[in-house]
Length: 235
Image (tube, rainbow, N blue to C red; front, side):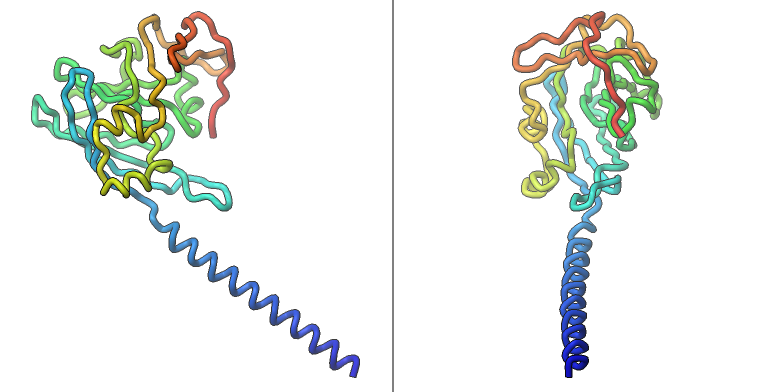
């Protein structure tokens, strides 16, 4: 009788375990189904420094590495728009090491400023300050010295973190207005500005100290010849 009870008890425990396991599998499948939303496409109005507004079509994939319990991080992305002066279609295709930060048109030339992320600092030989500048000419993008940016004081005028704000973008019917992106109501960076006025020449080389040319809450950015901290590359 004891052996029979032992067998029944063991079978009950095994049955309970299988029920628990099956429930976990169902939960995992449900979460996986929810997590298949691995891209986002929307339109975004960008307020240019000259006061004009252009509308971008933006696309972001979410296929990057992520921790257990989280969702995939950002990966490849693109945006495109029609040049307001020339009628040319301008398109940028990038990956997650460069974050969209600032777009401007100066004397019909398009400039695009990126911030570095997810190992981009090391990938691009540790630029100081950690931004990259591109100009669009003859239907292609060219890297330019950061000091060549025609606007020296600026603030982000694009959505910089689509993963963080994709639910807001959905609620807005997949459109971000210039008020939301330019005033940083989505980005959450309303109090900081970038100041390149004192930049003489961007430097490259890992292991050196860096500085952020940023003012925050009215506080001035440190001079470029003062390097108060070490920048560690993000992975």
